[in-house]
Length: 471
Image 1 (tube, helix red, strand yellow):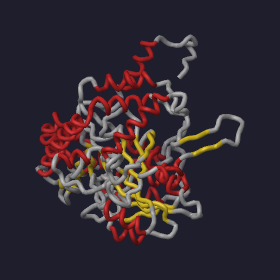
Image 2: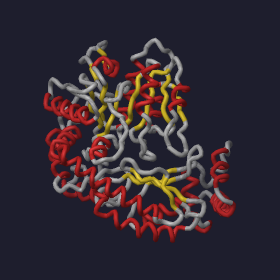
Image 3: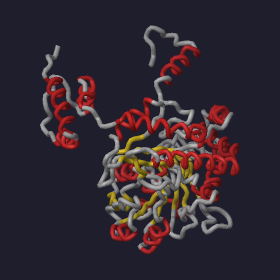
Image 4: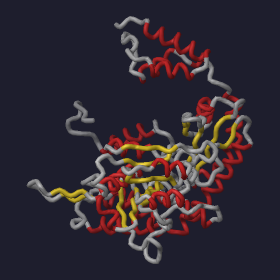
């Protein structure tokens, strides 16, 4: 913010000191103890290289590739690297593959939906079919683009959609079928071959969301894991997306969206000349784009190389195996799915601890995990995104997990202090002097999910919160 007491601004070092102070509030982005949001390869010097590359191109604008050909060259290099990894390019079944660099997986998925929608202007009310486990960005795309979203349930055992269910969900208005490789929540690969076949038979595009862990799957296959076909080598797959700021270990945010050929990509572009300014031609959502993230991704991918990624994937899988055994050895816990990518996902047995208390206990021991709520018969779970940086610390997780399980137990009603309930009430739009909302469905749903003792304590503290004077 602008400091009214310092109209002349602040010294650079003071500003940086403020940023460092604010950053101290964040979760640790390095060290192998944060299992979500960040992707750390623990490669010495890589951060410095990416930062330097970012600075070199931070003020380059991707709006006009003729003005800044350096950025165009770097984008084309990244697209080619992703295509070679994911079954496209010369000598493959998708030799004419083309692509675009986007700001992240959400933009890639929105563009995949937009391209499929605009390719069928004859359909007035387009629809897309996705598994219930598909990333929420598909729902966001449907919302933004006014496309109906048809979800197919996943089997509670396999955590994958039934191919017959996908086929049954297809309608004449369906413009796109999507699947995950792997899914974010559980890390399993959908039956891409069969889903793509169903889509192709119906004349519908098929997009594979490989944003999360797709960069690692080809390397896991080379390490001997039974990774099923999922990429552009699969007939019927028309597009695929992969995030470079995940397991390509580039700084955020860079993703690549690939199409099997230029004709399939054509509806992705937006062009507009009916105004007095420059003719706008955008392959992605943004017009102005900083070259910084693209240059940083270029430097990262070029520096690590194929051998580097194979080694990083080997370390990551070793960490996955160690964490998996820790979960298997912990009382009251079970795996939701056998790991087949870079995710370890577990839940509690009937006699196990309260998972959300367990998450807090792990955080108290320096392990930051991601809790996932129950959904459509699937139990609540704890999600671990595993990176190469976890490998040196993985052996420490088992003892800490056992201690956390022993300490967790169940959520104690006395933990609902007035401050905790006040924070919950504020999050629901309730507060002192505000009374109760006209519609209580949300509050009652929360109360219904709570066991009686917890419900009683919640209501006592909430009524106490309401019965305060508004000074």
